Image (cartoon, rainbow, N blue to C red; front, top):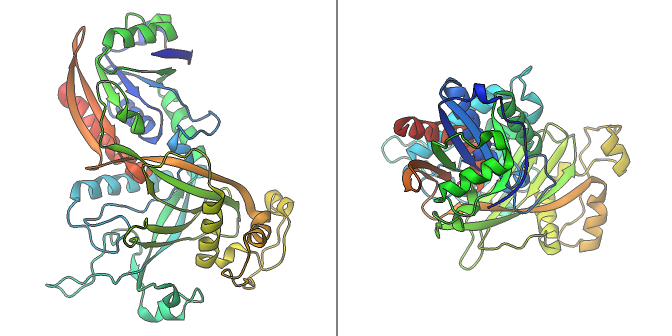
Length: 434
């Protein structure tokens, strides 16, 4: 175990009877820690987050949450996250996502402390397959039908779209209201909310989750006044770290690499996604446009299993930009604009349609020149995927004492949209064993 710095710990007299240590400060760790503090009296819990990476750190491939898009579009489907079919096999995951959406929707309300982190939008999802019809009712079924103002797009709407959807192989689509998350801003909000509630944040790394004595020593090294604060439970929210963390060593965990491009296009206030299952030997195709309240836009993306390459691949950036412009030609402003105008907010918006060149005939260099005024950065992250899905359970370790470990990891690309529901269930597991 290694230690670096520590935030201030409350006066010893304010410490409570049950000390819970949360490992990890991504969106899952932060949200779980907040839920424990806010769901029970502080006379019951003292909560410490111990993590190697924190929200205010520079972006790193080792801190996945910084790189997420993100929007709330549930992946709780009985077949595949890229499918248009109804949810039939994962009712618990659906409940988790719905709880998270309700919480985030409230947080996105005007005047909320988190309003600046979130943006309510209309989202359109396009698919390369038909939406299935229920045999009994004759009605189309869709796993996103619970979102506000959900609609199945008519064939007439698809065929008349200026996006030339049918030529792109689109066979169906839906629209609904949801929200997007400015992930770096939201992570800092969660961090501050946790600290303001009396939570403790320490920077350090755990090598062996079973070595309670060493963990206690680490806490003392980070903050000597915590030396005699007994640890009563651990919450494992280490994401990809659960593959190598001694005492867990979950070989079902693997990296699912994503790559995105961050653009500045404040005139885009809607979301679009095209999803399709990759054919034999090819990865899933997944193109998305995610606007943020700040005026930035995340476009992507890819899903490449067991790929840990730490920097954006230029050829992937080009591919993402081509797909994104095909899906959202509105990204290109009708009149030529300069980077400085966009970033300063002095760009004059127009209702005219942009003139888009033939993307298939455009060279890579010409494409980059075309999009350069909007470019902020290319990025990549490693989603903490897990064969078998999220792990949310309890196990016990025998060390100097016998204590419970609540595992809450393996959310893949669904960490933000599952965060509050997963945190509630982790807290319930904790309540059941303490």
